[in-house]
Every structure is written in C-alpha cells, then in structure tokens.
Image 1: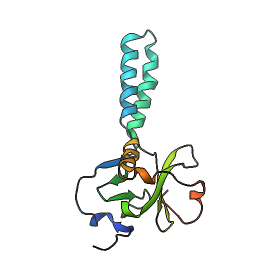
Image 2 (image 1 turned 120 degrees about the vertical axis):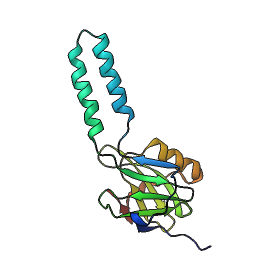
Image 3 (image 1 turned 180 degrees about the horizontal axis):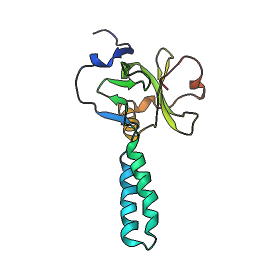
Image 4 (image 1 turned 90 degrees about the vertical axis):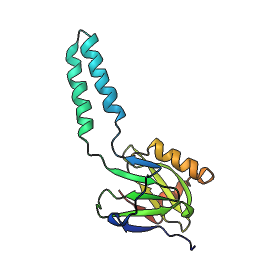
Length: 158
C-alpha cells in the first residue's frame, strides 16, 4: 500500500466509523457544575439572589453552539474548519513529525501538528485533554514542537 498524504476532503465523502476521540467547542462539565452550585445556593444560603446570576451563566454556556473541531481515528485525524462547512482536512498519523500545544494569541491553547514536509497544521479551539491524550498515546515519541514552529508554512484553520 502506498504512503498516505494528508489532504482536504468533502465532509459528505467521509467514510463511517466511530472516532476514538472527539474534540468539541463546548464542554458540559462547567454548566453542570454551575447549575449544581446554583441549586446549592438556593437550598442552603440566605443570599438566594446569588443563584440567579450563577444559573443564568450556566444557561448561557449551554447556548454556545457545539461544533466538532477534530476527531481521532486509528491511523488519521480529521480536522474540521470552523469556516468551511463542506470540507475538512485528513491528517495521517504517519505523516506527523512533531506535535505540541501552543498559545493561540488570544489567551487560549491550540494543538500544533508539524508534518514531515514541514507544513504546520493548527487545530483551532481549546486543546482538549481527550485529544491530547489521544496524541500522547499514538505518538509519545513525537511530542514537542520547536520554538519557531509558528514560522514558515502555516495551514491554520482559525
């Protein structure tokens, strides 16, 4: 079998299968914790008016649209572009030379993949613990990106 090359593909043409890991824009942990805190404040505290803004914040967090940022499979990662609803990028694990976490310039973290041909691909959004665990399990020896990884051929999906 020939060597795989990372490429863009139409989302409609993706083959089925269950991903090993999925990174999404919205977490359900924070709204659940805030909702529970609002419930505790209502039941236990004399200052029950604090429960209203806490519950409102939890509802606002649930209103954020949930998008899939990336999915990890046995031999490849699918990266979805938030600005392109038709196509996505398929990156084969065998092509990844190095990977690591970088600041995104806006106070968040994103995952940076450096391919063997020196192309850099950025997975936008929060660097989820599940996706980082997936990368560490598949490529523990390739973790770490050089300081100048933000230079050169960037293929940012931001």
